[in-house]
Image (cartoon, rainbow, N blue to C red; front, side):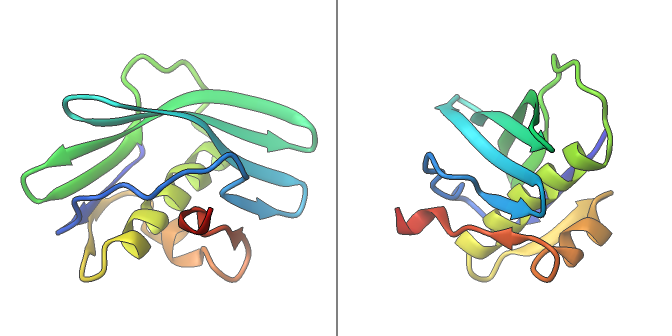
Length: 126
């Protein structure tokens, strides 16, 4: 399962109503955020050439930081766009938590690639 641990992080970034990133005809959004006892549940949407894919992602608190992953009950094709979305969330958490580092993950290449290819929106400014 795709995931990323952000070590020494404690805060999820603020998500506004605007897209969190755009890459050509692909738009990444977080439509809703609910705080849970373990962290945050996010209703994520990836729009690829006008076709939306909706799924739930989680940002869970851990002793060593935060874990970004798909929700256990999600039924979505685990393809490149879903992986990119999780990588974007991880990158936003890293940016929102100075001093945090990327821990155990199977999304490292995607996280490192963000910045040049995708326009990431700083939603904290909203």
